[in-house]
Figure 1 (cartoon, rainbow, N blue to C red):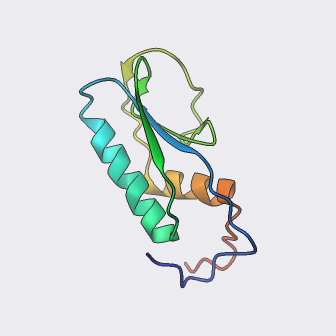
Figure 2: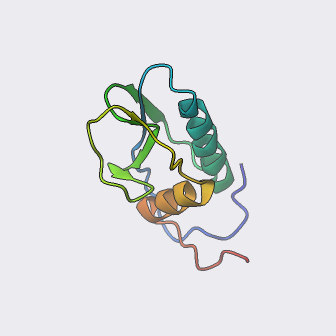
Figure 3: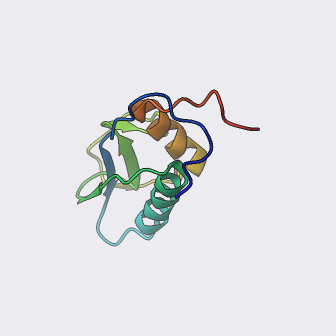
Length: 105
C-alpha cells in the first residue's frame, strides 16, 4: 500500500464499491484488477461487492455512481467503454474525501 503521497486530509470515508456484470463476461476480471490496483495505490482497504445480473458488463459503481458517468441501466450488454484506472481512482478519491491537491504530476 502506498500511503506516503500526502494526499489525505482529515478522516477518509470508505465508499461502497460494486462491480456489476453478466455471467461469464471476460471483462469483469479486468475491471476488478483495475479497482484492486487503485485501492492499493490509494492505501484503502475497502471490500468490493460483485453482482451478477442483467447489467451493462462490466460496470464499476462508487457510491452507486458509474465511474464512466454513464447512466446505470438494467440491460444486459457488453460494454466497450471499460473504465480506466484514472476514472476509478478519481471516483474513489472524491467519494472518500481524499485531498488530491498534493498529487504530484
